[in-house]
Length: 129
Image (cartoon, rainbow, N blue to C red; front, side):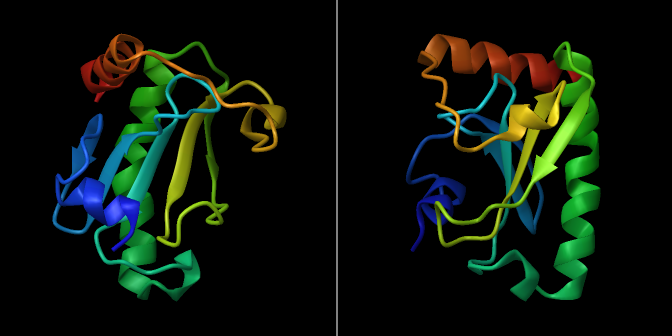
């Protein structure tokens, strides 16, 4: 069972943004920028492109209102999306407010936010969802 499956099952606490029968979205607790959200399918598949076709299309549709909420909640040019998939063997999308392509550079250091700061970021997104 991956760490994402444990988060989905509620075995590990998370800062949930949205959920439906197929997907779960939550804050990355080591974000590149404030507002960095992970979107994961509830089915445990390592490679995003090994997901069934309906999951691939529905994952983007599930992510759309979250991306729009991120754009409203943070001063950014747009919500960027990245698929890296190397950190955890469970398919996932990264959504983050960006002003340049460099804002999605995963070689940069990650932020270390307090639980209070993460809760405030979560609330900003939820208020705009």
